[in-house]
Length: 117
Image (cartoon, rainbow, N blue to C red; front, top):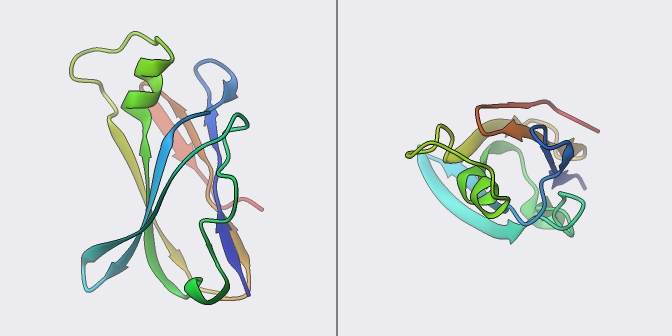
């Protein structure tokens, strides 16, 4: 069976994005179904896979990262309102037997992602 993981890199400070909220949703019939909520650890990763075993299935998903709160706790000056509050990444899982790794590289003014390994 496949599994889903993520990690966060704070590109503004050059450090792992630790203690950031990560919510995972499954998208069914244009509705979001919350599957899990976690916080990243000191390495910017969740402690285990976000999806695995029988819960890992082909479909459309979203990862939502709490970047505004993260940068606020890191004492990074932001405008009010912040340019980025929540970063939502919508992605598809097309192969049930593979490892999907969806990282977030983020600063207060930009972000990027890719399918990692």
